[in-house]
Length: 301
Image (cartoon, rainbow, N blue to C red; front, side, top):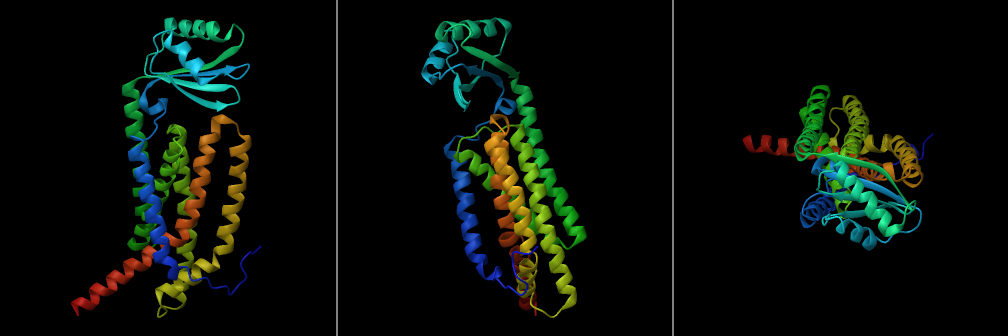
């Protein structure tokens, strides 16, 4: 099945400067968002502390919940709504059996016995959180390095460079989208980022493979023309794959419930940005790298 008719020729390479400009703006906005928010909104996995998930039988105002926690000397409670009449309360205090009993008593005193259910209580120490943060960063960096080595070996170094720049581009913008909406950055989000990296590189490899095939057919042809032709030839496949994945993620986002809501959101952003980068970032960088190489060769002569 083909959405794009054979012989269609969109000038993707010609729009390279516009695409780079758009990407630069998105990256700057993403970085500014993280800086202005004072860093990422780390979840319990990374920040350490206690998370309490509470389900109420009817609407419970955040101020009333905060007042109940203040009554048991938990002044730093951060309240986040995650569903209908359901909240997550985060605090830096360590959860002990005594504190758990106080929380239950405070909720009963504020809302009445039987009007709430404490669904889960999780505690992560600061050392564990720091260790998980370091491992998450290393996991993403090592995935980039592994991709660079593989693509440089399978194709050429410039292809590997283009792919890695595109992956870094995808990761930064996805994190920026999460930061703009102040969503929690958890281990689930790290899993989403690694999934995005895998999806994006697969899309990029398909385009690179077609570029290599077309170049072997005509070594004298301009690389820019070859890249344009290759992207156009694989465009139907790219659109079909991305669209079907996007539909599944939409279903997860709206129907999957609060547990995987942020995970689905990160993947939705990542699929869109990953598809965009495979077309407008990865391949044009290969072309830019060759143009720089040719310019240097002319200067030496």
